[in-house]
Length: 301
Image 1: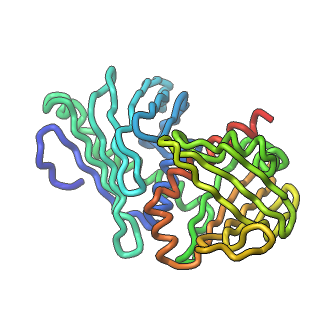
Image 2 (image 1 turned 180 degrees about the horizontal axis):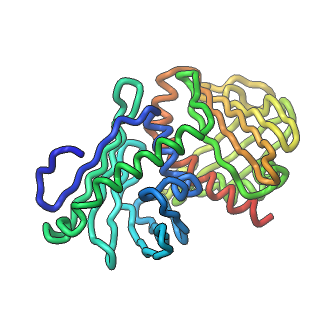
């Protein structure tokens, strides 16, 4: 635990042997977060997890003795480098700032908890630092079980286990009507989708921002293996016309895992600078929210 500078605060920190993007992904995926959140012996039942500013997080934490601890928080800031949440009463009122900083190929993860009063902080000072260390242990175990990190410095990757057959997840990616229902994170909308799903076929999707600005996304399918794999690039537009500025190629795989789908998205960029720009734009957050929406839709088909 780091030195405290305020009688109302507790600070815990650890160097995690994973990239900041991978650590952020373990936060952004509610299925993963539920597995590692909390000290040893505790389990979680999430009722609401809206991972964006002003989004609610409601869950019950069950202790080793069966005691249930209701928790409710509101996210104030969500970026790949910093997550800030306000933990509400009735348990303990505090603001928690979680920072993820790159350090020698790893991630310096720091949790800073500022309580509403020094007295409230003193109530938990004897056990919270120990619990946070156990929480870090569980996070490291979760990270160790995740798919290998991208080995290419130009690649970003996201993977999820979706509780739906892969045929339905694939359909949600290849049906123009369905893709408009999940493809963009709020407050953005997908207002148009035209898709010729075959090698060499064109994809054209239009997204609309909250200010009404429309963003066209043309591309070409390079590979199509039904229910198994899609490869899409924006290097070309319709009829194999080169695009003005190639940015990325997306490789999607849909693997069966006992009736569920191991969904993996690998996004490969032309340059490291493009990859860094995409990450700074909010790849993990944006694609994470979109994947949550994809999973919810696929489970209802």
